[in-house]
Amino acid sequence: MIVSLATGSPSTSAPSASTPAQAAPQVNVERARTVDGVAVGYPHTQDGAKAAAANYTVVSGSAAFLTNSERRHRAVTAMAALEAADAIGKKADLAATQAVASLRGDTTDLSPGQAIARTGVLSARVLGYDEKGAMVRLWTATVRGSAAGHATPKAGYRSVTVTLVWEAGDWKLKDSSSTAGLVAPIDARQTSNVAGDFAGYVPAAADDPVVTGAIRPDGFPAPYEQNEQGARAAAVSAVMLYGDTRFFTDEQWRHRMLAATAAPSVLKSVTSDSDATARLVAENRGVGTDGTSADGSELITRTAVLATRTISCSDQAASIELWTASAGGVAGKEETRRPQVAFLRMTVDLVWADGTWKTTAVTPSAPLVPSPPAMQQADSADAFAEVGGVGNAPATA
Image (cartoon, rainbow, N blue to C red; front, side):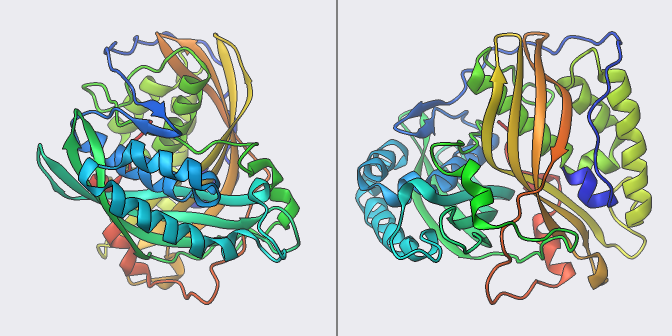
């Protein structure tokens, strides 16, 4: 994940070692439920608003939404505010029409079952918030194309501004607008895959990530349900938290995060390995404990999940594969340190412990890399400062 991008070397599985760990504080939280393919039922908090904005954006960019009008209209009904539903539906139909060209690749006709349409959220900035509404700006990485034909699906970046209202006890979509987002180059060490390599991430083979914004008082994810959906959500949160800038710059935060997400059996060894990795990244990037370098440049690290697949799952153990987009670099005047994005597949192994899903290993596998954005030049290094900082971290699952 982001460790391999930031250090230039592969990250490794968490080794097994036995150590006692304090049980996570238990919190009764009702997580979002799914209605017509849309997660609904968010906390009345900024994290809940971030989660709603992210999920609604991911759903609106999914293959099912863009290629199936019946499913699209049901999804709009589930996520839209009552007064905005008609306008949002019309905007969605227009977006679906415009998406056909990008989803058929180099084939003559669109094949919905082979469409690749995935969106990952790299940054979420709350522009405005009160008890009645919220406005959230997302920086997203997208992959669009087809697993059929010969053209490799293309990467893209969007800046999406989502306006929400608190209606009937939930965050509902009032409006959404999208423009070109910050363009980060694909990590120079990665080369594009061929179209057929993406077959494992067509609609029937993988699911979009779902975040809920449900957190404990200490700021880490609330306990997950003891089922496959809960295991997937825990895996998504884990890689997002490992990709947070604080993982590399704030030792106390890193230790609390590991205690909240890693299984007791591996906590001691994972903590030791993570401390060593964090020191290496900070030294290589020339940043201090505040995440900035001597000239004021800021470390930028984020991990977005594009899709999830279950390898195995029981009520005691699970193995989940994630397709991720990890951004890492420094926002400053030195262009050679500009953030880059690596497209990685990660396998997250989990066990049921302390009343929730906890990780035992996070292991990288072969990358799955789209082709670069067409006709788009990478933004300057200092432009990425606007997506950094703790306040712009996306909501977890």
